[in-house]
Image 1: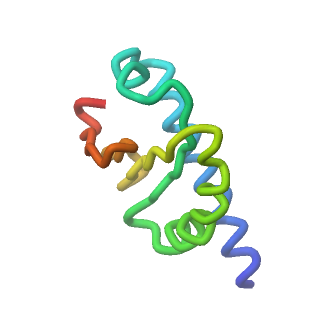
Image 2: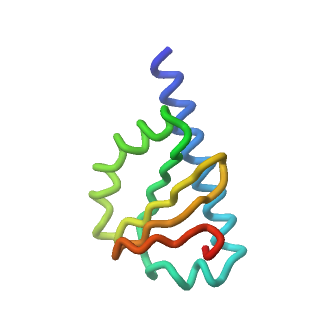
Length: 96
Protein backbone atom coordinates (compact mmCIF):
# COMPACT_ATOMS: atom_id res chain seq x y z
CA UNK A 1 0.00 0.00 0.00
CA UNK A 2 2.81 2.44 0.90
CA UNK A 3 4.52 1.72 -2.43
CA UNK A 4 1.33 2.56 -4.33
CA UNK A 5 0.95 5.84 -2.42
CA UNK A 6 4.56 6.75 -3.19
CA UNK A 7 4.06 5.88 -6.87
CA UNK A 8 0.95 8.07 -7.01
CA UNK A 9 2.90 10.90 -5.37
CA UNK A 10 5.70 10.53 -7.95
CA UNK A 11 3.10 10.63 -10.71
CA UNK A 12 1.60 13.77 -9.21
CA UNK A 13 5.00 15.47 -9.11
CA UNK A 14 5.41 14.63 -12.80
CA UNK A 15 2.01 16.17 -13.55
CA UNK A 16 2.94 19.36 -11.72
CA UNK A 17 6.24 19.51 -13.59
CA UNK A 18 4.18 19.35 -16.78
CA UNK A 19 2.06 22.27 -15.54
CA UNK A 20 5.27 24.22 -14.99
CA UNK A 21 6.60 23.38 -18.47
CA UNK A 22 3.34 24.50 -20.08
CA UNK A 23 3.49 27.76 -18.15
CA UNK A 24 7.11 28.23 -19.13
CA UNK A 25 6.42 27.67 -22.82
CA UNK A 26 3.54 30.14 -22.79
CA UNK A 27 5.23 32.91 -20.84
CA UNK A 28 8.44 34.42 -22.29
CA UNK A 29 8.81 36.72 -19.26
CA UNK A 30 8.89 33.72 -16.95
CA UNK A 31 11.53 32.09 -19.11
CA UNK A 32 13.59 35.30 -19.06
CA UNK A 33 13.47 35.44 -15.24
CA UNK A 34 15.04 31.99 -14.86
CA UNK A 35 18.70 31.04 -15.11
CA UNK A 36 19.74 29.73 -18.52
CA UNK A 37 20.16 26.26 -17.01
CA UNK A 38 18.49 25.12 -13.79
CA UNK A 39 17.23 22.07 -11.93
CA UNK A 40 13.51 22.22 -11.16
CA UNK A 41 12.25 21.11 -7.75
CA UNK A 42 8.45 20.80 -7.60
CA UNK A 43 7.00 21.48 -4.14
CA UNK A 44 3.23 20.84 -3.79
CA UNK A 45 2.49 22.71 -0.55
CA UNK A 46 -0.99 21.28 -0.01
CA UNK A 47 -0.33 17.65 -0.96
CA UNK A 48 1.45 16.04 2.01
CA UNK A 49 2.44 12.76 0.40
CA UNK A 50 3.73 14.37 -2.79
CA UNK A 51 5.60 16.94 -0.68
CA UNK A 52 7.18 14.13 1.35
CA UNK A 53 8.37 12.44 -1.85
CA UNK A 54 9.66 15.80 -3.18
CA UNK A 55 11.61 16.41 0.01
CA UNK A 56 13.05 12.90 -0.08
CA UNK A 57 14.19 13.57 -3.65
CA UNK A 58 15.80 16.88 -2.76
CA UNK A 59 19.18 15.28 -2.05
CA UNK A 60 19.00 13.66 -5.49
CA UNK A 61 18.18 17.05 -7.04
CA UNK A 62 21.17 18.59 -5.31
CA UNK A 63 23.44 16.12 -7.08
CA UNK A 64 22.22 17.70 -10.34
CA UNK A 65 23.26 21.20 -9.26
CA UNK A 66 26.27 20.88 -11.55
CA UNK A 67 23.71 21.12 -14.35
CA UNK A 68 22.43 24.40 -12.95
CA UNK A 69 21.10 25.95 -9.74
CA UNK A 70 17.95 24.69 -8.04
CA UNK A 71 14.70 26.52 -8.79
CA UNK A 72 11.79 25.65 -6.52
CA UNK A 73 8.28 25.70 -8.04
CA UNK A 74 5.72 26.08 -5.25
CA UNK A 75 2.29 24.70 -6.10
CA UNK A 76 -1.02 24.97 -4.30
CA UNK A 77 -4.34 23.64 -5.55
CA UNK A 78 -2.59 22.28 -8.63
CA UNK A 79 -1.55 25.76 -9.76
CA UNK A 80 1.80 27.47 -9.70
CA UNK A 81 1.90 29.72 -6.63
CA UNK A 82 5.46 31.06 -6.83
CA UNK A 83 9.05 30.30 -7.77
CA UNK A 84 12.02 30.51 -5.46
CA UNK A 85 15.00 31.49 -7.57
CA UNK A 86 18.62 30.58 -6.78
CA UNK A 87 19.44 33.88 -5.08
CA UNK A 88 16.47 33.31 -2.77
CA UNK A 89 14.24 35.77 -4.59
CA UNK A 90 10.54 34.84 -4.54
CA UNK A 91 8.74 35.30 -7.83
CA UNK A 92 4.94 35.20 -7.26
CA UNK A 93 2.92 33.33 -9.87
CA UNK A 94 1.16 36.48 -11.02
CA UNK A 95 4.60 37.85 -11.94
CA UNK A 96 5.76 34.50 -13.24
